Image (cartoon, rainbow, N blue to C red; front, side, top):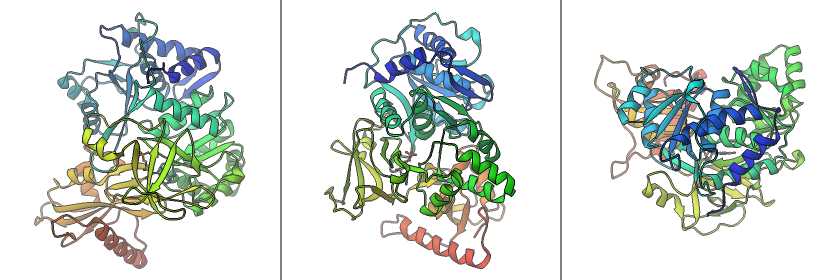
Length: 527
Ligand code: AMP
């Protein structure tokens, strides 16, 4: 593909034509499209000024969900480099792992997080990261570089995100300008986005959902995005009246439903009245139960539009925008030019109604994991990406997602977690002899992380959920920490000594059920 980037051309067009309309707002104020254009252009020109330019460079951004993040994101894209979002939610060790795996060339840090003595920034200097620039420090952005990046085409890298893929340690997924254009253009059409839209944004900004599905779709439609730094029910409810669209993961829907249920009658009525003014409410990143969907419908006056996708492929299935055609328990039909197959273990298409693995092909599908040819080879069957999710076609042509094929991938709170990554950190805990990590179903979180541990012979260190969490907190993001601990005498293993995780998970589920029946156990308690 050598055609010029339509993603960039369309971004430039919105920045030009939307002038004084609000593009982004957040805790630190508001930026019009004109201001976003000027400020991001200063960043782009500053980045391009250096000898060698930015082509192929990977530039990290570390900033809270606010104006500086949006300006840096747009600025890096306009420079022709690849944006690598780092999350302030991650401990420095995890940020550093991502920076190393992505082989960052530079890092832009929001002034409020910039600290030359921070663990991350010291590590990066040791790695020889060429330059760390504090966002918002006007002097750094003298804007004297070239106006436009040379030769950004549909196949140039645009954004690199990290995901656990279908197995193993998190890998870099480099999405090209063409991939993201297919996603953005497909969704803004399918979901009828326009410049009148006002998106209320409460999703993390190191994930496809928050970055591309929410922020980019809205910006590239000429709409405005309001960032909330933190997910907080009261704050969200008080913003709904001003918004037209809200996108969420099921755990966020559940939190709002719980808040509405415990609010006073007057407050609940006011919240529901505001929530009902939204034109579009969506759900994705994890399965939405029909029961939760119905409760959301009661509060928001519409059944949430559920869609399905992955970091590697973008959004490839969506329920229709037309509310009466949304089907509970299904993710709808292909969007954005995606093709879908559902196949058996031999890669042969199964009949309608039969379950199999979902395979995906189309313009939003990535080309390769970064620096990981073996994982890439395993991920594809010819031109088809093997999702690792089990699904079936219904008679009406809609697709129903039934769950993941691999037990080593846990989907919790909309995040895709690698059991192997969590095990690698926790097996070093002094009270752990052996450990195996699995996800068990949970109404709110989709799945919760459970650690099954064979204790080490020691009395000096306590073995508990809290001690595992405090041991791992510098290495793993909070949402990866186990919520439950199950102590076992031994782990079920096959003849080759490999833990049989499906057996283990079934045993844990049965044990949790028995405990719940006995004393309705709270998350966080040991069993
Ligand atoms: P990620 O790459 O982190 O976005 O995670 C992608 C994974 O999330 C998919 O492979 C699915 O397992 C899961 N997922 C995304 N959307 C849905 C959905 N609507 N229903 C069920 N699972 C979903």
